[in-house]
Amino acid sequence: MKPQLLKVSSGPACSFSIRRDNVPFVNNHLHYHPEVELIYFKEGSGTQFIGDSIQTFHTGDVIIVGANLPHFWSFDQHYFAEGEKKPDIVVAHFCDNFWGSSFLDIPENLPLRKVLENAKRGIKLTGKTKEFLGLLLEKMHLADGPRRILLLHEALLTISESEDIVMLSSETFQPDRKLSENDRINMVYQYSLANYKKKILLEEIAAIAYISPNSFCRYFKSRTKKTYSNFLIEIRVGMACKLLIENRISIKQICYESGFFNFASFHKYFKQITSKTPLNYQKEFLEKSTVYHN
Image 1 (cartoon, rainbow, N blue to C red):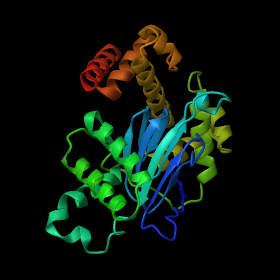
Image 2 (image 1 turned 90 degrees about the vertical axis):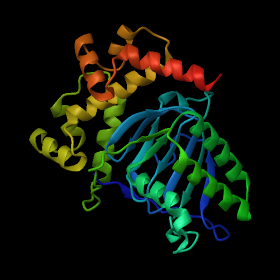
Image 3 (image 1 turned 180 degrees about the vertical axis):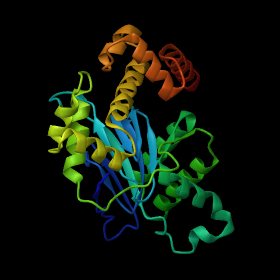
């Protein structure tokens, strides 16, 4: 797929960038940059695309995205509504050599070097680690001078020592940035997110991309390494996970709200992607949430 190169400014008096955003439309298109990104969603939920991984994200999530890894976050629609709660995001961008070309080469910093290497697939932090890192990022945003650098060092060291991590992109994912297809792939993504609840015909989505149905199949697979039908199933399962976590409606209702047209296919694809049944997924999440907050 062809993301856009994003230029990240750190400012003349800073070696790396950290900011706080309160709008849902900042960089909500597929992009990449040479800087590593460490992001904390103090408030926010929606669908995230990182490499070839499609998942939902939630309030409290912390993600580290490696250099040049394509990504974007599509916020849930209610964050765009007037008078509704707004997102609250703290995000740091830094080059892996900002503290000097030889800093990561010293033996004591091998764990940090491994974190940055693993981040090229994207890493999601969970449990107590994400809570601690969220607090660190808020402190980092308010800090300046050497303390800001020390807090970033502590954040990376915490990730290196944690078992509360989930790798996101597949090991074989290789971004393709050769062809100029930014607008086309983003239109496909955005249309899919807006219409996943209904049956999307091949002719329909091909028209969105301004190419023939046969060409679209080849085009989409060449950019994403997956078929469009599999891509759509992943979006629907991600939405089902979000609804299961919220625990407001029955699993049967979740089946149809997430875009599946019968319970058998919902159960089949959910287990295929998550390795759990919808009920077990919900029970495990609720049990872990109880443990983490007691």
